[in-house]
Image 1 (cartoon, rainbow, N blue to C red):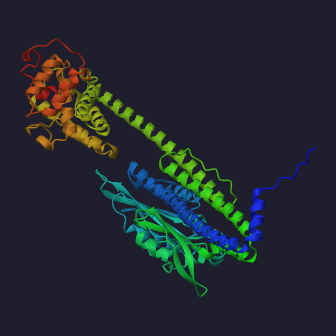
Image 2 (cartoon, rainbow, N blue to C red):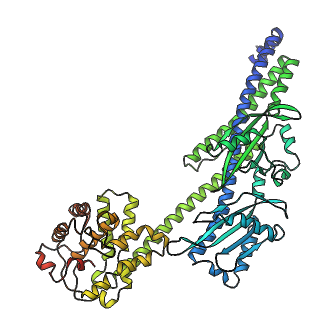
Length: 605
C-alpha cells in the first residue's frame, strides 16, 4: 500500500529556497515591494480622505438645509396666513416656546414684524438675551427679497458652544414685493461638532501621531468653527497655517473637493502631510470648508516597520510584509471602491444601491452612514414625488371646479371654459409649444372668464343683446379676473391669458388696447379658442354657427383681431379631429348665424 506523504505547498519550497540562496536579493526585493506598497497605501489613504471630507460636507449641508427649511417654512406659513398678525392671538408666544423646546438644536426663535411688537423665545440656559440680539442683528440687516440669509457660526459665550443664525423674510403686498416681517432662528452647532468628532480622550495632536486623519471645519476666513479639540473652535483659531486650508480658501468656490498634500513643521521637524478638503454650502451666503489632515509618515508607519523587519530578517520579514501588505491593501481598497461605486450610482439617480461593508473600522461606520443616508434620500425623494402629484391633482381639481362654477352661472355658457381650454391645448400643441407651456395655456384658458364672478347676473344672464352700458360693464371681467388671481402667487404664470384674451392685434381690444407682439402668445391662443366656442354655441339671442362658418369668419379677421399662426393652428386641429365644437351644424350664411345687430366683439365677451 503506497504511503501518502503530507502535501508540500510550492510556496513553502520557493520561500525556503529564496531564504537559503538569496537573502540579499530577497531583502532588496522586499524593500522595493515595501516602497510600492507605500505608494499604493498613500494613494488609498488619499482617496479615503477625499471621500471622507465629501461625506462630512454632505452631512453638514443636510443639517443646514434642515434648519433653512424650518425658517423658510415658517415664513411661507405666515405669508399664506396673511402676515404675522396671527402672532397676536392668545397662546402664540407659548406655541413659539413649545416649538423651541421640541427641537434641541434650536436655541432661539424670533418673529420680527416691520411694524409691531417682536415675538421672541429662547433657551436662557443656553443663550442670553443679549447674545440673541447680537446674533439677530448680524443677519437682519442683510434680509431682502425672498431669499434666506445665513450668518457665520459664532461663539455663544454663556454656553460655550457655537451657534448659527438663519433669517427669512415674510413678504406681503399684491406682488409680494414688501417685507412685512422676518423669521430668525439661532441654531446650535453641536451637530456639526458631532459630525467631525473623532475621540473623546485624544487630542488632535495625538490623532496625528497615531496616523489618524484629523477632520475640522473652517469658515471662509480660515477660522475654525468645529474641531476635535473644542477649545480650538470656541477660540475661532485661525487655521490658515495649514496649506490645505489656504488651498481651500483659494479654490473651494470652484472645486467641490480635492486632495492637497503639503509639508508642515511638527515638533521642530518638517513633516509630509496628507490633506483633503471639501466645501459645504451651509446657506446661500455661508460657505464652510471641511478639512482633513493626516501625518503621512504616521499613516504609513506599518510600511516603515515592514522595512525594519526586512532589514532584520530577510525571508520571514519579507513574507510577513508581503502578506500584511496585500491583506491591508485589499481591506482598504475594497470598501473605498464600493463607496465610490455607490456614490456614482446615487449620482445617477439609483437610490436602491446599498453598500456591503462588514468592516468594524471607521470604513464600516462610513458605509453604514452612507446606507442610512441613501435610505433617507430614497424616502425623501419618494415623499416629494408623491406630494407633488397630490398637490398637482388638487390644484387641477380646484381650477376645474372654479371654472365650472363660473360657467354654471349662465346655462347658455355651461361647459364653455372646459371647451375653450380643450381648444387652446390643441392649438398650443399645433404651434409646437412645450408641455410645460401647454399646461400653462390649459389652466389659463380654464380660468379666462373667472372675472365674470364679479358681473351682475342680470347682465350675465340677459337673454338679449347687451346695451352699450351693459357691454361696458361686461368688458370689466378681465380686470376683475386679474385682481382675483393676482393675489395668489402660484397663479402668476396664468395671468396673461386671464387678463389679455380680449386684446386685438390692431389695438382696438380691451382692457389695455395692446397691439401685435405686445399681446402674449398665451392670450392670443385663448382669444381664438374663446371666439370659436362662442360662435359655435347657441345663445339666447343667436344660434350657433357651424364650425366651417365660424372658421371662415375668424380667418377674415386675421391681422386685425387674431394672430394668423394661431388661426391656422386652430384650422389644422379642427381638420385633424382634435377640435370639435359642442354641436356641429350644416353651413349657413353669415347673415343668418351672426346677425348684424350682434357685433363679433359681443359674441365672445
